Structures are given as structure tokens and as C-alpha cells.
Image 1: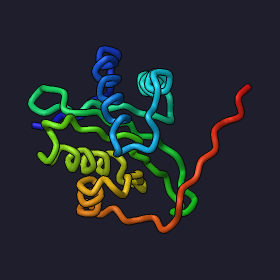
Image 2: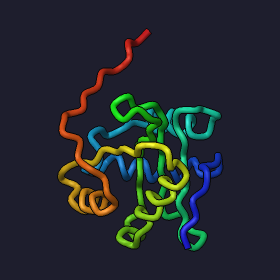
Image 3: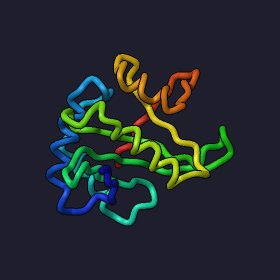
Length: 149
């Protein structure tokens, strides 16, 4: 049985361990850092309206984590939920857990567009997201870092 719950302070070490694994894989563009991991977890554990952290459990055992952010998407004219991180521990992969998380997230945010990024080379994830109904966005995403004070 799959359970999805809010991330708690007691999950910090496990989440950081999973983040290190996730961010060192080819599934992610950057390698992350201790500082970024700490900031991400701190934001998830706060009352932030921007980033939300979830723990995914299978039969009471931690099977992964997810971080989602919320915004308004002017292209679709509605609220948007971004799946920032969705990491499933290797031994739980290909069991439908990620699919169940997406179904849960859609049910919890039924009025929202759900978006995510996936590396093209991550064929299993690309295929799984396509089966869930995700469509490709036909343009390249870019970013700029904030001005350091």
C-alpha cells in the first residue's frame, strides 16, 4: 500500500541522502550541493507557499520523496504545480509508485496544470510520463540566477 505524507523534520537525513543520489544521476541537469539540499529541505519544512515536500511510503517503508512548487501559468491561464523532484528508491522502481504519486497529485490539484522536466536520455521516465498523459513542450527552457547581494 502506498502512503503519501508531508515531509517532516525527522525525514531530513533520509531526504538529503536521496537527494544526493538523485542529483548525482543523469536524471538531473545539475549536481546540487549541500547548501542547495539544505535550502530545499528547509523550504519544504517551512510554511512556504512555494515549495512542498512529500514522503512516499510503501507498506510503511520510505520508498521516495517528491518536491512540488506552485505558481500561476499564464500560458494556460490557470494555477500550475511543478514536480521539481520525484525520486523513487531503486528497489521500488517499476512498481507503479511514481504513477500513483502523479495520480494523487492530480487529484489534490485537479484545477491545476501539472508540469515537470525530464532529461531526454532518461528513457524509462520519459516513457512513464508519456503514458500518464504528459505532453512535450516545444521550446527550450532557460534560466538566470539571482543577483548576489
